[in-house]
Length: 242
Ligand code: BTN
Image 1 (tube, protein in one colour):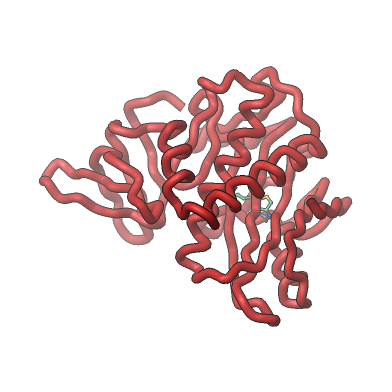
Image 2 (cartoon, helix red, strand yellow):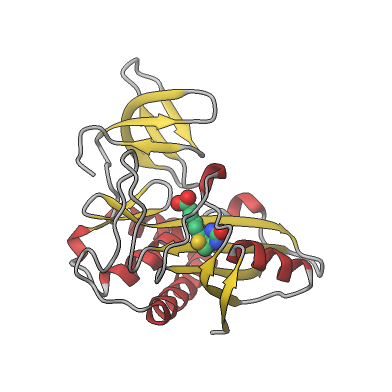
């Protein structure tokens, strides 16, 4: 696996985008000790805290952006497996769409970005931020880190585990499609069958998190009998602590 460590960059996703537009076709994992402009999902910032992992895998695929988006589940699974190597696996869960939680608190986030590769195909940047040594203090979105949970995982070891595990999931996805990823994700799902509040771009819905659809959408069953398939948004589970 080709990996490259940078002392500092603005965002490893942005660095991957620059490299892709300059003709890099990967697979390449770019990692930074520090990020000055880390990006989170839905236009949020991703904090730069000492000792955490900031990394982006760059790939060029023969796939449409919607299909490649399924690989965000592969990224979450790879990060969960890295956590499971050092933390009691019963405490490691996945929250839709691709947060990794330990004991209900967020330890890792995933941000996928893509575009047309200059040499043909789709470049895909698989951005992963894993809290190894510290975590943001946010009341609305409780977070944690590996050290806080009693685990020991260095930046280098985390990158090695994540990159090799992601390769294995990518291979399964290429051979068998989304099915194996969906099964593995569901086996670790946080909040399935639980009351759920889904915050979308311009509406907030309440229902029960009923299933993960074959394309990665969340199925929300509402009290009025309606079923909504949610492809983008934030979900909260008021009934379970975290
Ligand atoms: C989220 O909001 O949960 C996604 C966070 C993704 C953060 C990672 S850190 C490495 C990569 N570079 C970025 O700018 N973002 C991703």
